[in-house]
Image 1 (cartoon, rainbow, N blue to C red):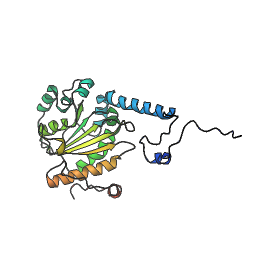
Image 2 (spheres, one colour; image 1 turned 90 degrees about the vertical axis):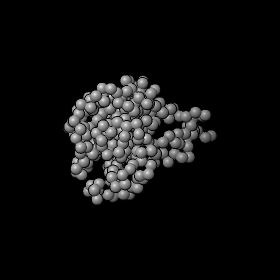
Image 3 (cartoon, one colour; image 1 turned 90 degrees about the horizontal axis):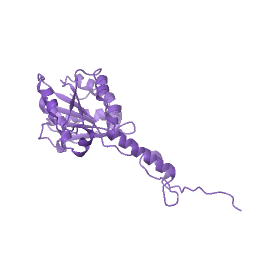
Image 4 (tube, rainbow, N blue to C red; image 1 turned 45 degrees about the vertical axis):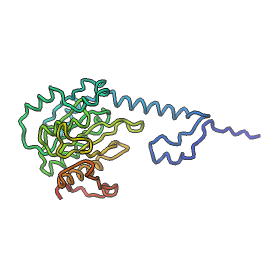
Length: 266
């Protein structure tokens, strides 16, 4: 008489592949349903993704931390007055509100090469976790090549295109926007970088931008993202454009083996 009891959960033949990805594969099944553990993990991931969208970014704390890297730091707001409006009206998240425009107009414009915009986007967690560590690498690299920078600009309820208005105000060649990306069920804190050469308000489109995405602890490393961005800046300065016609020709091997020397002006 066979006394062995079979597991109530049927294993998936792809089980060994789970070590290579955080995607939800090889979850197994219990009858016609998912195992309890898989259901609980999904609910947790969904809750973390919702929190990333709805928990507000602490702009005051972030501004204080960034002031240790660069001064001045300014905080502006889009025309989306709150998170609900931001989610329902993407167009308002692309435009600065009246107070923000007035703040910029009060400033004496000095020759500026680049603006760096940090927007909460769709994941406050992404900016909280990754903006400061990445800027600790980016700012010295730009300073090393004598780029004149505008104040670091934090924007509440901002979309990607809002950087165009800031860059246009300073007449800056380079616009670098750090923004929280739409959270996935395996990456609620993914940050994206959007780079635009000669950004102009109400003129630049998504086709004029280059995107470096998936920056988080289990995704693209800060050093890798920096190499990609510096490559795009170098090529844009040479070719005088960015966007779909500017290809990222870096490879994973190059990103791992490039030496620490800054190559913006080589």
